[in-house]
Image (cartoon, rainbow, N blue to C red):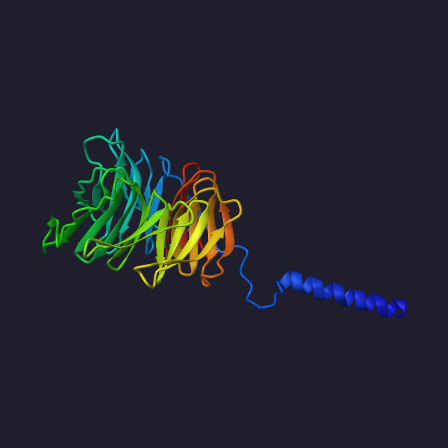
Length: 341
């Protein structure tokens, strides 16, 4: 081969390698995934430390420690508008928050453990905003609403009492009635601490501090299944018939189509993850909160082969929520960060 042909061949080989590197050639010819799924649009800096968040539609609720509880309209995520503020009274401060966008309610969990208004529930619209308060003992690991129009249940995993709930219904005028339509008697599991949970239809899945997940039928108030996880489960979230588990050092996916006996599909180790404590779903993306490092975004469209899409470093992350194509995170140093895909 003469020198001219050799140079042309070498150049062609170089261009093929460079093109494959740039376009991400692979055997399956998969579509390329973006290097950044969620981009930061705005940071809300509240007077108190941001400790937790919840989101629904175009709203985000924030538990802001000594500054109380806020609700913002984030229709334009780059320019949030404050809709509601509940100013906590000393010695209380907001540690957890739950949002009900059906009945326009926001619930606050307040610490420390002292007599008083620890679990107030407010309308986040209108002028006469105080609705009632929940009579839980606490402290909570997680809190969430299940709601229909004029009816809601506020659930919590209570460090003292296990799984608790308050049921309320509207009687047609301005009055809300407690313990309506049914009353939840509570559920404790041999004093094992309950952590994060998620509800799908009548089934509630709960991560326990003894390396197990419990699934319970809330209509029958009975256990459906109890099973071990490969790690130390901190939180769980339904994804169709699958259950996503923030499993401390691992991210574990269970197939719960046979709800009596869920089985492990995948256990994923995420490089750099120290303590995965929360998981939320945004379509086919699992959003994992590491309270030491930040957020990991994992594609679970193929549950047998989950793939890390993005890492978002944060100095002191505390909470995570997802709604309407947005990822919201709270951080004690930075405030509340609004990301959008």
